[in-house]
Image (tube, rainbow, N blue to C red; front, side, top):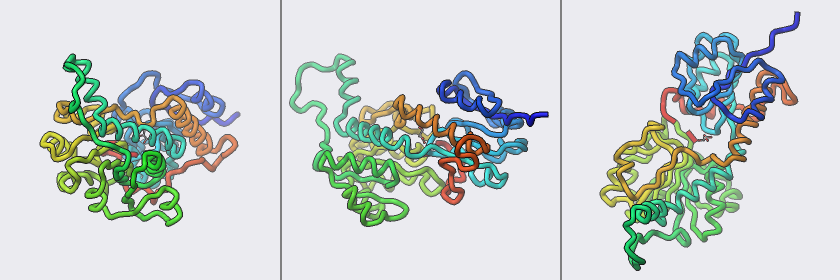
Length: 341
Ligand code: DGY
């Protein structure tokens, strides 16, 4: 008798023509509508599964995989993976993969767009106009801050941080960065970026962009004390994960004029946004769309599908998924914590 085909669970609707490739190798159960899955729903879905394709909406840790005796692979559609408890998966020999590289440029584009929008008050100005408050051209109305000639601070100088630095050179910005480890000198030269300590980054940046992974070490790294070290004219942009910024402290800083403006694409309690942030004018708020170009979201799904096929021992890369998450790289231990980059 033929071996039964492995079973895989796909947690959300993605792109059918790409997910279709799984059907050549596996029996696929796909959730047809965008859904929230709690622990018991995920545990039920994984109980009979050999593999799963999941998004950042699904938190997967020891409780979710406790009854999943056949589970061998989790393919995350996203580069950030603090929705996964890598230690818990590794303890059960479950391979975890993510989707780096394919979203770098798109996410860097969006980070730059948000930074510009915050500096030049783009969404605030549009709301002003749409509300009928524009009474005529006003020489001193809605004045913002320049990007050109200013200092860009990047916290987290991985692929996306480097993409933002690359864009900054076209704006004649000076780039300073802080990272867990300093980049080699040739990479610093390539991006014209200088390494500084965290406090210097806060003090020197006219525009600070957060692109670091979320972990217990980066939880609320931008808190009231950090914000107090920034220039009052500065902007803060977060395209990483919500938990990196203490949102209450940010709301205070923006409300009191301690910080000029901010742009957030990620939030601690997604999809809920702190009402104090919603009430402010000097903040740009977008619903976690930094990687959201059609081409890039398709590329993310394609890579996740390749990862899953390979991790389950099929296809041309059988046994060698293109982007396995190295267990040591996960310092998040945060499957129960909100939202990473
Ligand atoms: C990621 O890949 O981590 C993004 O935040 C989701 O697109």
